[in-house]
Image (cartoon, rainbow, N blue to C red; front, side):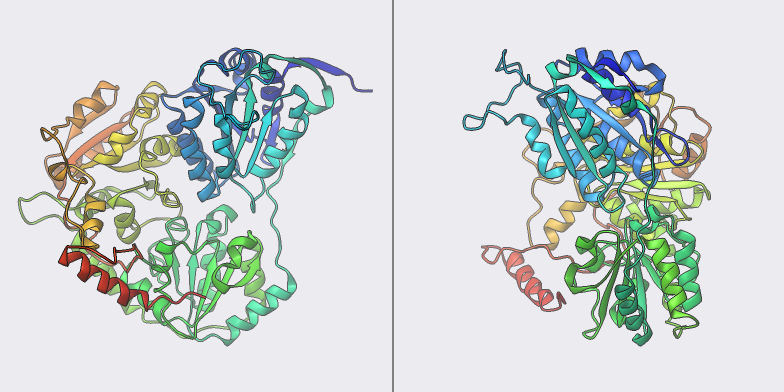
Length: 608
């Protein structure tokens, strides 16, 4: 007959987390990022110290960026492993809300454990406590509710007996994966309870592979057999399912061209002749031309975000059908799609069997060759003395890339340029574009390198995003986590400045030159990065950038390479319309013209 073990609630939490295993025999929660303060230092801090390497603790510099590193780690591990992040109450907790939203949008598991106020309410209001005048149960941590896949407030020690299994069940559910928030009252953390010993027996969590409903499979098979020109849109679900090879084989067997979303890029090697590249707003001409003609769009693990669909103008064939293979019924049924709610890998296998020897006619592969000729030109070495474009910076990095290189980014010009231009090997691309969160890049690169230490990680970041969140660079130096940062300095928010002008707006408050400042900043990014211990240099031109990228791989600390770029050109190739509302009334002729163009484009939207 099993007995009990007396532990504080915090001790019980970390002990339980330390024995939750993957089917490969590893801890599912591979450690805890922590910044301590009142609300978690006495309870969780003591518990984490006591458990030691059985559940290691890592110190970061900012709660949001620690969570970004944890999210990047889980995404790189294809959601097979994850991390936890703990904070104090108040601003430490609310700093993590943005990261929770990012994880929620991207369907990536992370365990957030913010400290909370006293469950017994005796010392209320405590330092940093948010008081709701009309609801005594509310704390700042209620901000996590809309951006968590599962939320619970631990106000009794025995709550852990139900809350912790629910948390892991959510994080390991491929259809429901995302952020879990366990708001942990600070007095509860320190309170003791007699827990059943059986609660701490090791548990193995399996990632299930739901198979297709036979009726949905039959309907999709019938639709595919009736199609003449199908095109695949591969999303992040292909990677999370481990369906990369299955997708490539399916496309080859049936001669179906495929395109890759931001989340799905790297599912199939760029050199595969059926890989037509990126679709939509940040897409290339080859992919968008194929999608415009397609009579059936087969989405695999994608949520059909507006950039993928060019705000629902990319799928221009008026008779086209939309099919969506997705683990989540919510995503599978979007925009009137014929849903197939199941795992990508097993579904592609089943569809392949059902289609038999069905093989479609060749689509114009000359478009693909022409597209790569065009992108060769925009990424080529500059032939003038002016500042290089972002595309030319990408070209320099591409020429130095290796088969094991992972290119990563998150916001600004570079995500669109990389999606359009970067030529990725399988698994060689990591983009946070579901939330397009400035400040993800450096912490994210660190999380990727932790997940795949043998890979060559190159982080693209603009000066604006670097200024938002750079402090985890110091963490990477302290922990000797090497990766390369290519920091493009165009002296402002060049990407949004182009959008501002593209919608008829005047240049205003985006570039430093157009902002209400007394003096133009001269930021020494090299000195700043070096002050945190990174190896930091400035590249004088594209050739110098290439040389410095090669040198960076020899170091055991992060390398930061700064290069000045121009802010006007943008990608320089590809692209499609994006629905950004333009004011109906304005004194400016440019805005009125942009509104007229906007109204014309809206007529092309094909939304079910």
